[in-house]
Image (cartoon, rainbow, N blue to C red; front, side, top):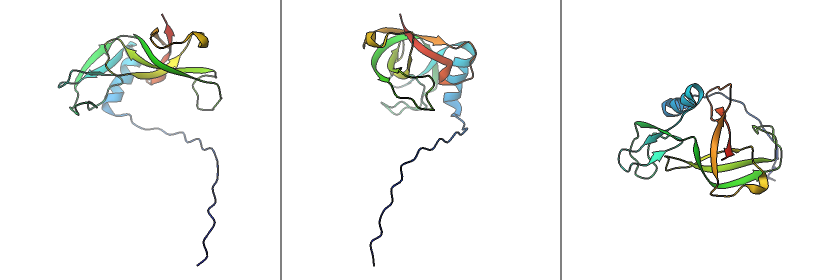
Length: 148
């Protein structure tokens, strides 16, 4: 039997789709949209506050149920800057993304950094959420986090 040659194709596929985010994420996005509030869930066993909220604590695996509001301010833990363009980016590059530990949360959230000099970004800087005027119920209802 003759060995067949493998063909490898390189392509790009954009697949728009709609899906339900579930009970926990729905509450999170509704609070962003309707109230400009960033909500987390508190683990009943270890007390950690998880943002974005999750049904189960990743540390002790307990089911979460208690909702708590966390601050719209936080500390930048790490960041990266993207210079290349892509049709699925929410903004034009260069685009800075930050890992942010919000006040009152024990986990981090990843989001866009805006109103910032890219050369001045540094871990440890304080940032604050800037909400869009027209919100739709997604993580992008927070337009970006700006330095404070």
